Amino acid sequence: MFENLSDRLGSVFDRLTKQGALSEDDVKTALREVRVALLEADVSLPVARDFIKAVQEKATGQAVTKSVTPGQQVVKIVHDELKHVLSGDEDPGKLKIDNAPAPILMVGLQGGGKTTTTAKIAKRLKEREGKKVLMASLDVNRPAAMEQLQILGAQIGVDTLPIVKGENPVAIAKRAKTQASLGGYDVYILDTAGRLSIDEELMAQVEAVRDVANPRETLLVVDGLTGQDAVHTAVNFDERIGITGVVLTRMDGDGRGGAALSMRAVTGKPIRFVGLGEKMDALETFEPDRIAGRILGMGDIVALVEKAQQTLEVEQAERMMKRFQKGQFNMNDLKMQLEQMMKMGGMEGMMAMMPGAAKMQKQMDGAGIDDKMLRHQIALINSMTKKERANPQILQASRKKRIAKGAGMEVSELNKLLKMQRQMSDMMKKMGKMGKGGMLKQAMKGMFGKGGGSPEEMMGQMDPKALEQAAKAMGAKGGMPGMGGGMGLPPGLSGFGKKK
Image (tube, rainbow, N blue to C red; front, side):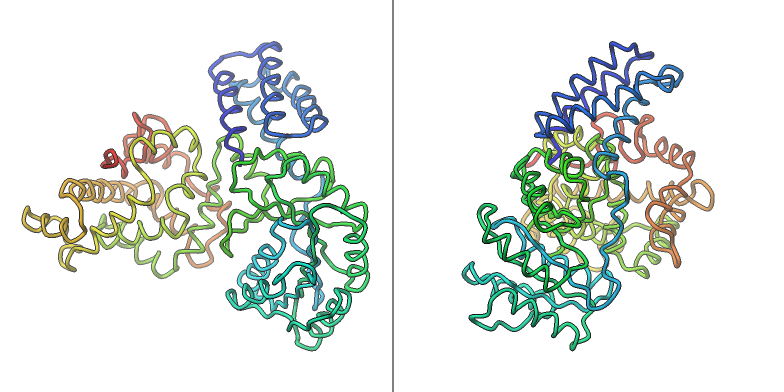
């Protein structure tokens, strides 16, 4: 969603950071372009104006003129200001669901994704916080709305309130409250009806439900693709109902992202979650710091580490670490890595969180690096015998022909895969020996070790010198660790050619 804004700001800051010293005019010119970029991204005019004013005040002060690299300092000021615009002055914190049963009221217009978001939040509370959740549909207008929530509930293993035809929303809310108390539920979520636009009947109905349920949290679900209209919707709902937070859906679409940047500044309400697709786990906590980093092309390594934590078993990670430290990296290990990448959202999902990913995307597309390629590589490994996977060096011409034929591919593709495995094996050996007790060991312990810290702590523990050494050892010319010089692709991926 923030791609266009990201590209525009990236080119502005590239020009700034190349200059040794900045004059006031340089900063003014750059900020004029930033303002145009914000307005093109559909950020509301007052918000864009205040944003530029705040950055200009900080950027033309003493801080910049004395700093070693003024350009980078300006980027940092813009990053901090973006973070402030997205988060406001107070920290939204977690959902207030301490006293059971805690009611959460979901409100919004029709088609914004309320019912799907209700199920996503229920799944998240159940799996991540161990809560017993009850969902209830109060939508008596839309055909099959109640059945939809019931089906989603069965999919994610969360209870839904039995459907009683002919009941009005207030009666359903009362029944949900009673069942939540009697059934020992921690949280009950009320999914209200929507309309195509805000009208008196809708507001009166939601007000009546709110008065009955007295919700701990009232979350407004708005479609991120509607741009500034989403902000007006939020203002109207807040005036009539009083909302505690916003969930922006369809943030994986090609909208212009301005709603997210304007929402907090105009309504004063925090964005709690963002929906990133139709799947039940496609819901992310809205982290202003990380979103600001993504907008400025700094990536989101912490989210990448979190994803890895969710998809990798601790014992499996420890076994891998012991093998990698000895420099053992065979086809079984490579297959596990490839499957892990698929689980973490494929190449595209992972690259979106890497620093400088936007610039590398075109190169990746040109080199044919995508999820199809990952599936082909897994197919080639599946075509090998156990012995061949454990000792890829025994693969001679006849074996290679058999494996390639079994996977329905060319021998040249298999040769690229073998080259990649050799490069990764060499890389693991170098990383295993590096830094205090080995850079690899440090990283893996931080991610999965017993009592391992949070991803943020892990990134803080990484020894910058060891990272620099690793970058040099892996052939990166002063760039990011693992992002080789030249094409800017990770060295482990250099064995890939054009797509057939």
